[in-house]
Image (tube, rainbow, N blue to C red; front, top):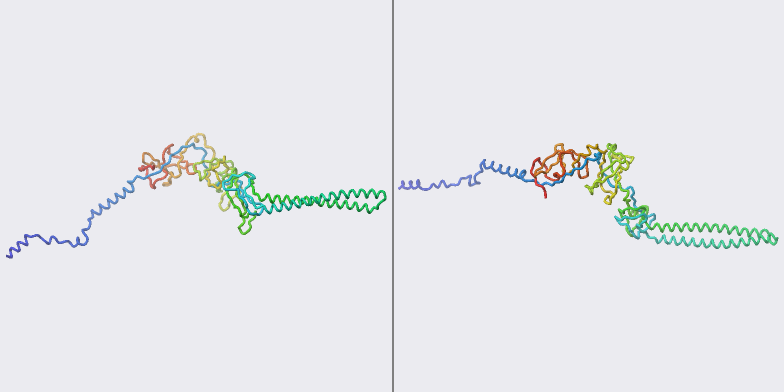
Amino acid sequence: MRQAEESDRTTGPDLAGLRIDEQDRRGGRRPSAWALILAALLAAAGAGYWLYGRTPVVEVATVRMVPAGRPAVLNASGYVTPRRRATIAAKITGRVTEVFAEEGMRVKTGQVLATLDDSDAKARLRSAEAEQTATAAALADLRVNLANAERDRRRWEALWKDGAVSEQSVDQARTAVESLRARMALAEEQVRAAGARAKVAEQDLENTVIRAPFAGLVVSKDAQRGEMVSPISAGGGFTRTGIATIVDMTSLEIEVDVNESSLAKVTPDQPVQAVLDAYPDWKIPARVRTVIPTADRQKATVKVRVAFDRLDPRILPDMGVKVTFLGPEPPADQARIPRAIVPNAAIREEGGDHAVYVLRENRVERRVVRLGQARGNEQDVIGELADGEQVVVNGPEGLRDGQRVQKKG
């Protein structure tokens, strides 16, 4: 019987083999070293694909070729300033009744810009005119009395010669005539004084009308209807001193500060190329008008005024402008050599060199160039570039020669 039970234990299933390992029950099997290495390789491959497998998108611009022309000897920046600019003010203190000037309005010489309250001026004028009329009437009365006194004098002199009257009577008649003549001279002076006062009153009335002293463009409206204006500041800041600001648009020019160390490169009548910040693709020919004969000791600069060869309505006061002072004409053989014009954004500084990336068949080619004349937002470059080639102006950092790219748009 015991042998049968032992035989059953020998031939039955081994239940001990079904026991769960303690390590597996706590957290499963640990990954092997080969699995970790494989995972690292897959992660590196994914990162490489992300960094180098994606095709970057770039923006391009077209290269233009132009003749060499005059070389640039100096670059500077400044502002458009008028030689004639005035803030128009009233000659008297008064309240503004009307303002006809508006920003952007073109005015002619003598055009009415504003009017002031003229009630007081009109009253003074009427008073002066009345005084002038009264003194003129008194003068007329004196003329009549003088004529009568002269007739009396002649009669008394005739009677005195005949011995009918005394010499004292003749003297009295002569004195009356002389007195009337003096009174008439005084009246004449009073009439002239009254006339002068009337003219002053007329001028005061005329001063209530503010006119443009010269033709130009209104750039600022400084007063409104109902405000007080005065030729001097008064009233604790509540009184305006100007009506409007006018600029003579025919006197626009450029004012730039040139460093003292570069002043020798600037000469009168020197050709200049100007580029307004508002119109970076517009090249404006100009010339040096004058060099202001004084220096700023704090900034170590000298002011240079540049006149436009031809004015344009797009040129406005206080616009920012970049100017390039040009040198002499190059020799004839060099003048025929064209220069490449590229946007400033296309030029990259790499390892001390300036380079551009040219797009060819969806790949970029790195080409080293030398900088020439600055042209606002563009730059002359000297290098192996051809007219019509496309250079990268906006793309990722770290472009490589031969890298595949995708053109935007």
